[in-house]
Image 1 (tube, one colour):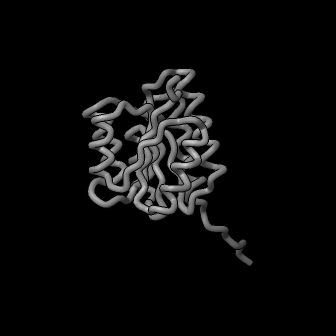
Image 2: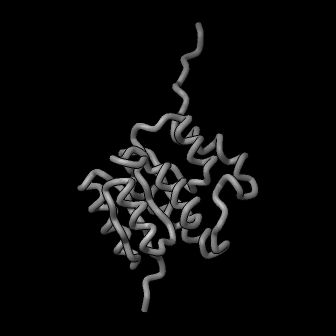
Image 3: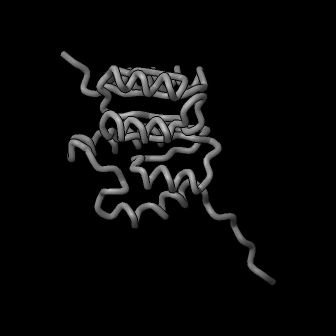
Length: 159
């Protein structure tokens, strides 16, 4: 019996990569882990992956560049991007390129689980392709999702 999904995990922080690897493996998925962007791209060329989880800021190629090149050179796969230091513009660019979810670090594992569940439902329902940039209603969802990542500061009323 084969695993239902083959996942490319790219994270340069060793302890976080180990935790994520175990979380994904416990779901019964084949996990292929890399710590560098160029290593991840090479892996994606050798192994058919169903989706990826990518850190944005990596040694070598960035996670967004890995996503873009896998989509262009191999085949589009749904991806979750993670970062603790991303700007709004980087997040917007990721969604425009088709990244399915963008998670802030420190990573909330419950939020990651929800994102994974949604991704699996989407794959089963659509068989992918099509990221948020090409999905119906995606444009209307983008501002709300960005607000979740960078909430506006609270303002005090004028007296």
